[in-house]
Length: 320
Ligand SMILES: Nc1ncnc2c1ncn2[C@@H]1O[C@H](COP(=O)(O)OP(=O)(O)O)[C@@H](O)[C@H]1O
Ligand SMILES: N[C@@H](CCOP(=O)(O)O)C(=O)O
Image (cartoon, rainbow, N blue to C red; front, top):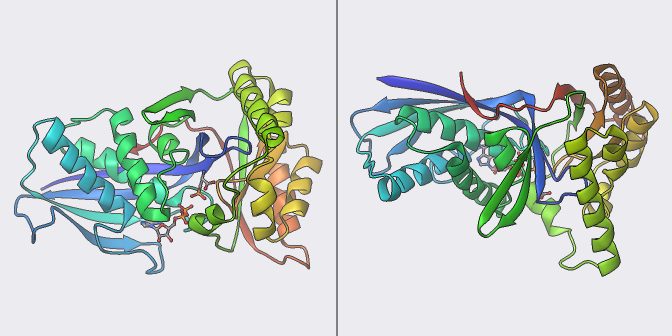
């Protein structure tokens, strides 16, 4: 029997102003998926979930409903129709969840990305990582009802990923400035992406759109030129944050605590409830994280949280 273990880390979607078009990966924590190749197919489905740990029993064992197994099914279908690989065996999947669910940390995308790099390795790497992104995006549709790429793409590719277009998919990877650190704080509460998407406006005023795309352009410029002040002042979201901030207890105090501690900027990580902040030193990033956690613990919020400080991960999903 051949066994392969894949790993994919947490990601931050949107990156404040880049709703659905910009995301990045951090280095830790992440999900692990172990695939074992069996000669004999069990039942009619080529993939089965042998075990899931770390989810508290919350996730589906149905291979068509868990993003980790669902994307492997899409991968097998694709290599059969496009790569001439007609897989007749069986893949047994073990998922180790290290990311909290509905956290704003790209939990569903991390499971999908880890599974895809493992499946690709298991079957002799018939696909490029860029091809694998397509299946991870479909996994997001299963997880939250929308096929957004700003977690799935960086989970597989690493770095910052700008989604110029969804149809056809056109992705641009952007390496991080060398002194950019991310602080990620996850309060111990859940906010489902599907719900956080339901509160967004279907249309926005032209004035709002102008502000948003101005900041996206400036943020990309700041990343490409390592202009940390420009990065900081570009982290302004006038579309999603105003609607989602009320869903996150203590959001404004936590954001202000990050800025007061010296962070360049701070906003909602993905659809929340996590927040992320950027800093130009690890020391400041850690100080901002401590301040954010203290703000979540204030009497009116009283939320415990987890905090990570990380550089941007340039490797993406990998084989362990
Ligand atoms: N392997 C998986 N990991 C996480 N969520 C999954 C997985 N498979 C299916 N899901 C579904 O996706 C939901 C979490 O996705 P979402 O709300 O987008 O938050 P996040 O992706 O940040 O965890 C879960 O509630 C679950 O129903
Ligand atoms: N662009 C998406 C990002 C969702 O990220 P998640 O980590 O909360 O799943 C959105 O804002 O809905």
